Image 1 (cartoon, protein in one colour):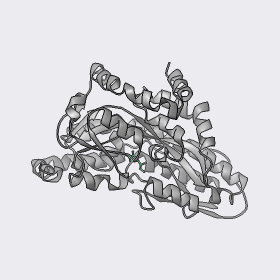
Image 2 (tube, rainbow, N blue to C red):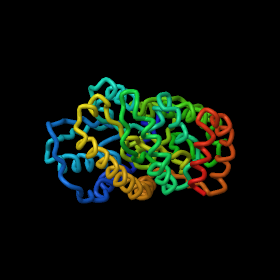
Image 3 (spheres, rainbow, N blue to C red):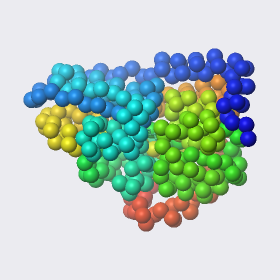
Image 4 (cartoon, rainbow, N blue to C red):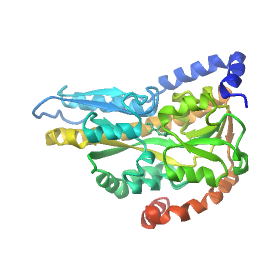
Length: 350
Ligand code: KDG
């Protein structure tokens, strides 16, 4: 099977290169501006340095959120709390970064919830397919009683959970064929996050899933180790997956949040005033980042289409076929996740 790179090279000669480079530039230019930093100056003893590391790239919505967090914390602390940002898993992928927080060698990170299900089983509820029909339902859950309780319960094992942001609705891409129905997935090697429900989802749909760290994904796609993957449009653009993937299907099959975490060792050294400042900044970062994510999402899908990506927009009837095929995933995981939690989230979308 020809690797995606050689196929791409033939396509790129066709002048798609210009469209792709413009695509990157466009996204950067259309980021919503940072809201003004509001709230009083915070004074407390000591000076502190925060290294804040994430796995996504510098041109994504998540990093833009971190830049706003840095702005709030440094301005409101009068520079006594300094924030240094790291992206593209420079200080480790999601699981490594969380372990660095627990050992106290890193102060903050914001992983997806999916790789952390082993530590916090309740997070698996976010991996159930089609559970969040709209971003508003996601907001009501994350900013509501359910989301707040989950932050409290995730504040253990050397971690303090202080807020939510958005990775987003996930879309399937691959280098082989347009996917309009589950049957089109037969034999396709799909990379998933390191998460058993995601493996279940793609196995149930008839694909051949393999779990892998996000940090290894681009190379695996480029070398044809896997044929496809699934991530939000923003990440497909920011991580240049369009360079090694010809086809995309707008599945919106799972909504993935990011959770903002602090090292408990660092947190316990912080004066209460600065702990409160970090909580407020994490909340404002989350609200702004979600706005960036949603502002860019549709625009980037359009630009990916214009840059030559073959995008299949599924009709409601086609989506229903995927939903029905995935119903057994709910039966399988209901007890482990907790029927009450699943029903309470379904309630929110009523
Ligand atoms: O750190 C980056 C990951 O949290 C995020 O990108 C996870 O969506 C993800 C994936 O596909 O691994």
